[in-house]
Amino acid sequence: MKILMSFLPRSNTKPEIPHRAAGQFFAVFFVLVLGFSSLDANAFDAERARDLMGVCATCHGDFGQGGARGEYPRIAGQSEKYLASQLESFRSRKRINIPMFPYTEERELSDEDIHAIAGYLSGVTLSTIPPTFKGHEDALTRLQMMEKVMIIPRAEGDIANGGVVYQKECASCHAKDGRGRGSFPMLVGQYSNYLMKQVNSYLKGERPHDEDDSLGVLAKLKDTDIRDILAYLTSIQPRE
Image (cartoon, rainbow, N blue to C red; front, side):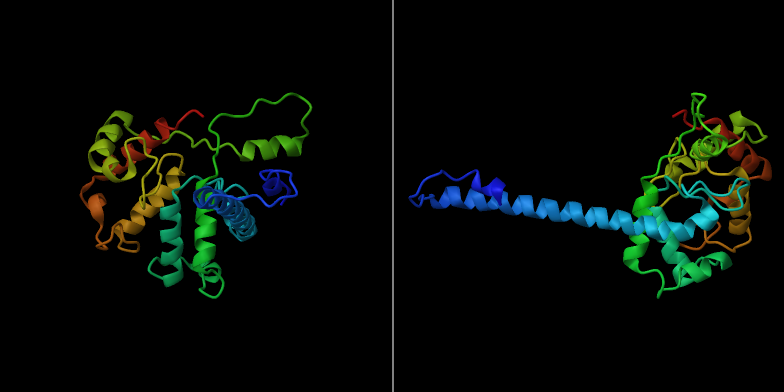
């Protein structure tokens, strides 16, 4: 209120404000009010998402980095659209995943919760460069600093062939740099053994590869091509 009063002349007489000026004045006022309301809403959503993430962290880690051996996937940095679609698929049982059942019951995970979690995780950045220790950190601090670093070990295979096959068959959906787009997930920076596990699920028909529930492009690839694609993905991790 003090901010608004500063715009008014300090006089005992009631100022006359032209209609146009008055309209502009109140327009600015409502923009400010709505802006503050939006900031409050965003802060609330972020806080809610962090609370929900506590459940996800049990398997996927505090930063969404997944399991050290790829038993649980990296979910940090995935697109919001992809994360939301997968949570919805788990909840509807379109995508069968036993460990996710108790966490994605509709009574436990609302649409608002899904989009809060997806929005939060999509904004998490995991560095691919080890931190520089200054010498005063204790062992726990160093461990926590390293947990925020995501470096996937090089996978065996023909990187050159993997790059050719990937760019021809996969890049149109997952992007040339492997970072995904829209409802298609980021592949670069994901655990190689987790990706291989998902490939096998697609080929067995346990998980639909696209909207038509087909095997997708994977059905026509040779085993060596898939191996080489995974090797290629580990070779193009960004340095950031």
